[in-house]
Image (cartoon, rainbow, N blue to C red):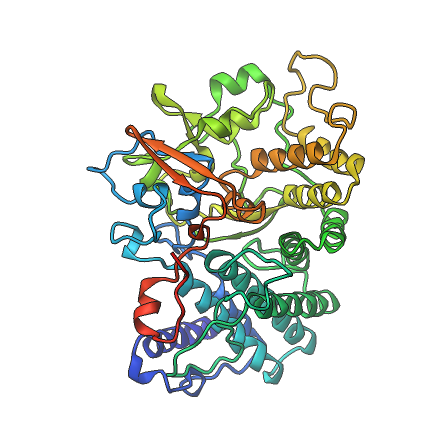
Amino acid sequence: MKALNKMLLLFCLLFAVSSCDDALEEDPQNLLKPETVQDYDELLNFGYPTTRDYGTQVVLDFYVEMMTDDMDIRYFNQDAIEYPIHPFSFESTHEHPSMLNGYDQSWKNFYQSIYYANVVVDNAASSTGNEGFKEYVRGEAMILRAFSYFKLINLYAKPYDAATAASDPGVPLKLDPTVQAESYTRNSVQEIYDQILEDLSMGISLMEANDQRITSKYKFTPISAKLLASRVALYMEDYERTIEYATEVIDSNSRLFDLSGNTWEFAQTSWGYAQGTHYLNENNSNVLFLYGSNEFYSYIFWPGSLALSDDLTGIFEPGDLRYYYFSYIKGPQGRVPFKFRPFPNRLGEPIRGMRVEEAYLNRAEAYAMTGRQELAFNDINYVRSFKFSDSFEEESGYYEYTTTEYPNEEAVIAAVREERRRELFGEFHRWYDLRRYGMPEIIHQHNNETYVLPQGDPRYILQIPQMELDYNSLMEPNPR
């Protein structure tokens, strides 16, 4: 309790310093410096962008779900709740006073995570305590920093392209914990990814060499760090590294969320609101990491506005229990995402995370992109075998993809990506996947209006938050 009180005091002091322009020249470490490795471990907990109670929210990138081809706003009532129409209609900025807390908080929250990670990376080694624990905590901080920069670069910069990354503007790179008054400029996309790769490599190495057998789903572990590394490699089109990291995850934990024991009839009549164990429950063995909070309660359930698009629901096959488990019917107009309501009225319940299923899907896509079609289908067929009803009466092997049915590489890639969409919808993958798939055209319709995001449109790169642009005269905005 004494250590926790010390961390709370430090947090308050840090917040006070970072909230005052004329205090930015001070180094928060001068105000109170942790002493033990346990202090730094607790301090790092504050760096995770995750709610700490069931009533509050840590607002992150919720708006990207409203911009994808997976979502519809057929229930939208602007008199009740205004915000969804703004990202849904692809306005020049995703920000609007009607959004949660009135501005985009992802920038602030992820840079706050980076600050805490920097403090731990720079200082934990000189603390008192077990040497192995010190190195593990430093490694964990590097993984958190890599994760935060990965989120930032994929929100506010172009998708990674090896041919242009060295000149594409990214986000500011800050690797020391000293708060300074000068304005920051944007480092290149390549510089940010180089740092992400360095942090992932060193962080995983330190955590594995000094493993503390941490079991919390709210902290990075060596396994969840490798899943993050496989995702980063996939986004960079480094397919061999994607396969390597994903395989290490699967070799460590191959458990998937199993729906297959349920009948198709039961799913159609009994699933829906608060039924069964939620897919992102921390007790599920396939769940590796949880973060964030539930920003969608007011947008879906009270009074509600978001629904699943017909384009998405139309790709689910008969017998695929995910159609009923991951969504439920709200009135005669369509289905809404059950994924955004793990528990009623608990706004702090995380709805973001990393699951073992992603390792199979990452690896399958990497196999497909490198012409290993049988291996790609082996992975997605294995995932599908857990998601279809065992008792569904259809022709034998109904859930299996074969290279006979999909004889060319393009068809295999499309099938693998479609399976990824089915399994991961509503988990903050689709927007980022569409970006790396070449930023295809998206068409939204509502109330006799049609909104188009053309292929390759600059709005696929979100605008730097206006508060940052106003405060920092050197910050280059994204083109519009």
